[in-house]
Length: 121
Image 1 (tube, rainbow, N blue to C red):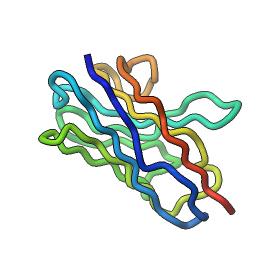
Image 2: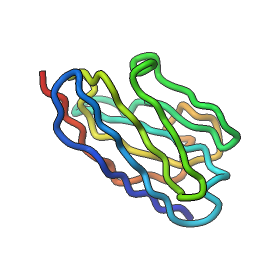
Image 3: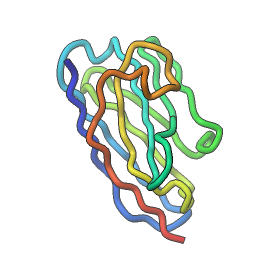
């Protein structure tokens, strides 16, 4: 069992930056792929990026070059650094833990409660 708690969301102007954090508790954090997803009102939950348990990061095309995921297995945390934010990045952001393929939400077993990110124009 893994419990996840996100923090760091807020309101920022377009072009600004935010850093989201996800703190995990439970077994063997290092063995999980850690993903970030987001969901805007009226839209499906979409993949933002992930950091594999074996190393390596993957990003959605919409955030590539602007967002960076890092993880610290010693501290059981994963971060999402978001730069050059755009109004279309506005959503609730979730971190998730899983052991299967990275992209689909259904492949993640544990989810945080989400944190709101709002980017004003």
